[in-house]
Length: 79
Image 1: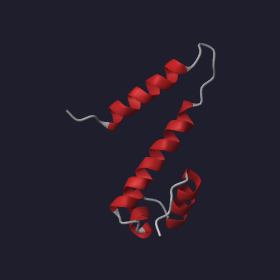
Image 2: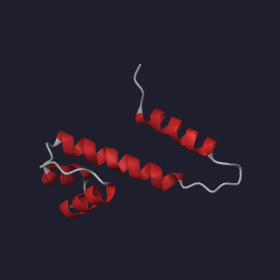
Image 3: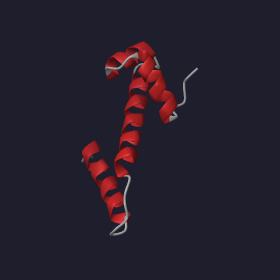
Image 4: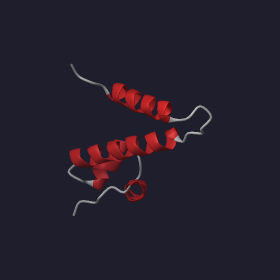
């Protein structure tokens, strides 16, 4: 039986919501988006052998945006 990313995210979001107090303000959206974007970029970089031109094309973003996102998300650059 395979588990989809939808199932995994659903479980994690449920845990986050349930951990909030009844009147506590959450900040789940940025946390989830940060982790999903980080994971997607890391997978694309791995599959393109860290070829930033190919990775940026696959992601549909410019190379400069890819570099900024890598820096912002704390993804280690391969030498």
